[in-house]
Amino acid sequence: MSTTATTPEREVRLAASVDRTIRLITTGKAAGETCTPDLAKGPWEFDAGPAGYGPGSSMGDVIPTGSPRQGALPAEYREASDAELHDRIRAAKATLGEKVVVLGHFYQRDEVVQHADFTGDSFQLANAAMTRPEAEAIVFCGVHFMAETADMLSRPDQAVILPNLAAGCSMADMADESGVEECWEQLEEVYGDLAATDAEGRVPVIPVTYMNSSAALKGFVGRNGGIVCTSSNAKTVLEQAFERGQRVLFFPDQHLGRNTAKAMGVPLEQMPMWNPRKALGGNTADELADARVILWHGFCSVHKRFTVDQIERARAEHPGVQVIVHPECPMPVVDAADAAGSTDFIVKAIQAAPAGSTFAIGTEINLVQRLAAEHPEHEIFCLDPVVCPCSTMYRIHPGYLAWVLEELVAGRVVNRISVGEDVAVPARLALERMLAAKPPASVPVPAGSTIAAATDAAAARSAAASSPAPAATGA
Ligand code: SF4
Image (tube, rainbow, N blue to C red; front, side):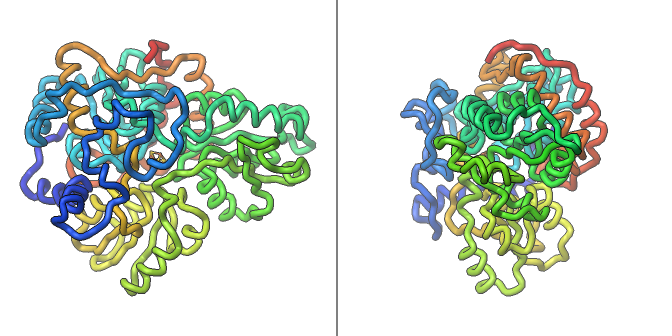
């Protein structure tokens, strides 16, 4: 495990810190704009307020009733200085040793990522946790669905901990189980028996869910012959789904579904949107009969911020710039970019570029700013000039990390995320179908400061497919 930064690493981290950028902007010490001054507050200020995603990209999204809330963070963590929190985190990790593994998502603030044993995307991190079988606790510095996936892929005796329970995901929340079940019933009215096959052995519709969805949705998909995908393997998964089904119901992210299907040659007119508030999702039975991909009305508020105007401005101001965006961006943005791909794709493209390259990146600013700090040989900037991090990733702060780790030192597990077997068994089936279709290209990025090249994930995937079932222990 690596937690102590060398001096050069610390300098890189300071330069990479979005928190520091926000503080400088909101105190008038640096030029720039944030999407809200509330970003300068401690996230605990929002734990006690009305339910909401908090400041950042999702602050305008409607949070579902009953979303998990975080109780008050003890004052000793709220009031501690940054330096004290970092010392306490390092001390707790040293005491716990191999008993704990800390995972940090690419979009997590640098002040948290510097304590992570692994950084990566959600599925890379779930696989990374499996390389630490001796760990009794997996502290997932990401969002709720990621911790659920880690719990489903880890051993029953390993506790998965989310440092702030309010760290949900607005996009995952846009597709809830009851809405999807209702959609499924309406599709049955249109298509008839959803288990009946045509002359080519294909059922009427295969449900496909993005990894960024709740365990309950993954369970629904698993129970109904469907499959999970990541942004790395969405095309492969859709190809596999089309072998078994006449069409696909894709959720929760309409943009990933549309961008992927369009690249495969599916006409836009055969991709109706399903609005869960309307009968037949707002479509006619004829439109649904002709559909190849039915897109759920969901989106990521981080990636929705990117626009074609921003791309045009980047090209005007930086001749020769390469524009790379995430496929969760709207279709016109993906079409206008030079390339689109997952976080792993973006990281590798930058690593492979000749020195002196210029990149405008369309993804979450914590990753973009870290890449810029780690690759001084390139010019790298975020397409969106306004600093607006993912609201829910923002809810994790070193104060919460220090709290959950010190609770572990005291022999207490707080904020455990557990998925019951009734959900986990079919959800794992949907994940295993994805692994069988074609696994994602890579896994864990070893900790330290560098976003390293991804490594072969075969062993971890194999372990995932055969991992024992986790216990239903309750949250
Ligand atoms: S970046 Fe988007 S999809 Fe990822 S956690 Fe934030 S809101 Fe959810």
